[in-house]
Length: 110
Image (cartoon, rainbow, N blue to C red; front, side, top):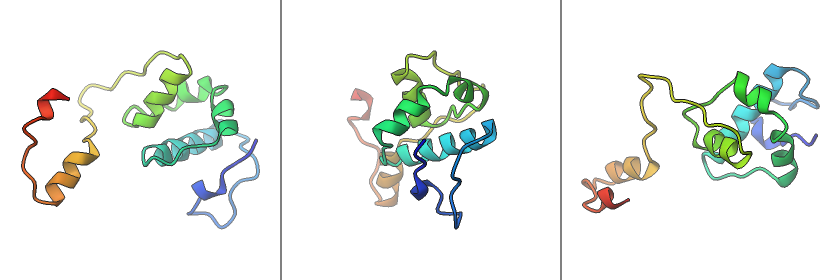
């Protein structure tokens, strides 16, 4: 399996293999984090992730839009958002607030 070294900026040497469920869960988290910032994995990575349903089920990332999208793309059941977990704030709201813009009058149309 190809392991994208750019997903490991915190390590001098990224892993050569993902041997344990924890290693795979860490890689899944890194892939989803990158995808949440519009950095998409290559086709080989997507094909490999499609075989990891057990990792997706054992280590859910319910707040990750990418994780939820991957589950949907692979035809798996959605993961439930735990009660009390705050909703993810869309990036445009943070950008609008940072730039001093008020509420968008058309937001209810989305």
